Length: 52
Image (cartoon, rainbow, N blue to C red):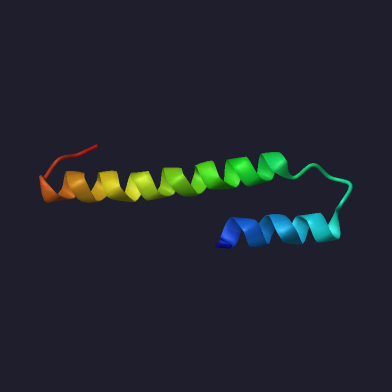
């Protein structure tokens, strides 16, 4: 199953096969996960009238 990060990395590999894009792949996934967790945290906090 391909996702946005896979497509981004594939595009970079096509355009710049000389570059090591593995860090981009890892950091992009970490960034997406961080955004997802932040949204979940904000929702949980707001449901209980808590401030971060």
